Image (cartoon, rainbow, N blue to C red; front, top):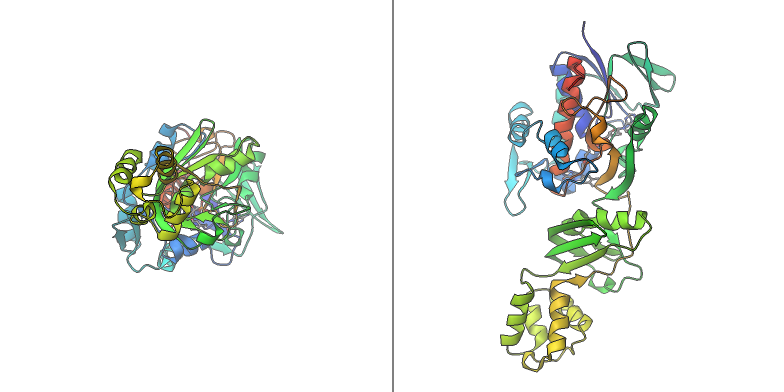
Length: 409
Ligand SMILES: Cc1cc2nc3c(=O)[nH]c(=O)nc-3n(C[C@H](O)[C@H](O)[C@H](O)COP(=O)(O)OP(=O)(O)OC[C@H]3O[C@@H](n4cnc5c(N)ncnc54)[C@H](O)[C@@H]3O)c2cc1C
């Protein structure tokens, strides 16, 4: 008998789940709140959609689960096969952006990715109930009832691919967390991740618009994250990939109500020893030596922060001034007070506990016949295509397992 599968949510994970389930022979209904689906794909990568990374980085994922479990789920669909799927099966050639290691559609149009996925679902005769919000998922005799207002759908298996809480305009409401909680799952507390930090008062507001590549580290108790890459001063605080990558440590420190995370920045590729040597050997003004490596307005700010007069010559630099300046250049405390929350957050941290779903099928250990995939699960990766990699991999696993009705492993 053909397995009837309902996939809730036509985002990245749900679209792949529906396609895979159909290809594996199931009768599939894809239910989506918005009128078109895949809205996060459309706004991703600044409208270019960073479909995948060129190198997988499971160790950089954040989850309450073991790194081994995250790795297994992420690599269930190997990266090179994902790439080949997009290029050969969906007809979306990808191009490598060499400096960032990110893969984008060669067209640089996110719409091409979203449309190719929706078109594949259409070609496979996946029933698409778009503009339809699911409001309840309940077990019935031998299967599940998916309720949408006055309508309902009775199926053998359900794939929950409803995403998290970030960027509500893309259809995210956190519904999948409620489904999981009702089914008896542990849902780790949610938090905005990959989101800009704010400062109020903002001592560096006048630097808004300045961007540069930095190294950054956030620490709070035993939690720590570091990143290297773009940093942007904004009118309200700080953004850019490097800031987003460590923002969850800051967000979680506020959520925990303890002392705020300490965030420190290394503004150039030179470390403390290299800066010390440079300041000892340079002639001319300290400001010129620093401005040789970073934008001049930021250089002036750091010299000020270190308490060094702007007209100081390198040869006149006192030892304590040099020590303070080297610290400001290589381990500069970033004054921050808050964050922008879910409104611009690229992902939601926390979610359905990974050890409560079966690793090879993503089927619930609490409620057989219910599968979870994508952002609703408790794992997210850094900026760079890693979150779509997670969505494609877990979506495929869940869709395939739901179609084949295999729940044990
Ligand atoms: C601005 C931005 C840029 C990003 N850029 C990138 C990038 O370049 N590369 C990258 O790897 N990642 C990027 N991400 C992250 C990536 O978009 C997400 O990790 C990914 O979309 C998660 O996929 P998902 O299918 O789990 O959830 P979503 O894409 O959020 O999809 C969930 C779907 O479920 C639907 N839904 C929710 N509740 C219901 C309900 N009750 N009934 C029916 N439907 C429902 C929603 O409408 C939505 O369509 C970006 C995110 C943002 C916000």
